[in-house]
Amino acid sequence: MNIGKRLEGKVALITGGASGIGAETARIFAAHGGKLIVADVQDELGKNVVLEIMEAGGQAIYKHLDVTSEDAWAQLIDETRELHGNVDVLANIAGISGRDPAMKVQKTITPGPLIEDTSLEVWNKIMNINVAGVYLGTKSVLPVMRKSGGGSIINISSICGLVGSFGNAAYHASKGAVRIFTKATAVQHAKENIRSNSIHPGFVDTPMTAPGHSNNEVAKVRIEATPLGRFGVPRDIAMGCLYLASDESSWVTGTELVIDGGLTAH
Picture 1 (cartoon, rainbow, N blue to C red):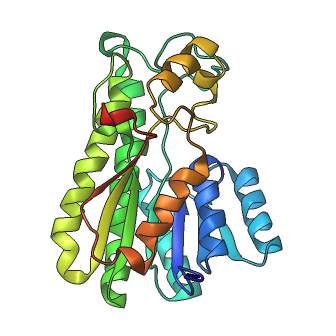
Picture 2 (tube, rainbow, N blue to C red; picture 1 turned 60 degrees about the vertical axis):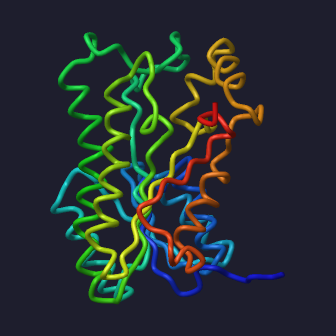
């Protein structure tokens, strides 16, 4: 059966759209007829993603966005409304692991420090981007979705938002917060036909995980913990985003879509 384009005419705003899962989600949304606003702070990479989409016949524009700025969110939503009239899909994909940006190869099993070795500065930075960014995006888009009769909010959490680990507690805490915030949004706005769901990736090959996967010992531990025996790729997660963005998931809200190769099944 040929379903056809699954987002025909829908306006989708994607944060973290310049690389990794965000970039692949943008490509797939555009291929399925979505009108894309690709937002990030990595301007050159983001503009390249948009150029690629447009050369393939898709519709997309790039916007610089600091997800921790309420004013920046307000401006972006106003500009999107002026251009398209509404926002049907918000994919909150922007996020950080908390590792040292200069790290090329990860030396330990997890990229972040133990609790006692985590500075308040690092803790706050992770929380501001991973949690406040999702909150501000959601808060900003709710009035637009309400006015247009509904919409879909997709928040990227992690398997780290479901289970604990022996390191990087700040990252885990941030992703756990995203999980519960997603459910609160779903319950509070279901009567307005605004759906909210979280996606929980396992170990996916992206720029964020590259330092860890560049260490053969770390990569071996992660692969052995994954029953399907391979790392995920951004497309694996982007296809989950496509489902939650489409009308095929019109009766799905407040749920957790785990895409992890079976890791959390045991």
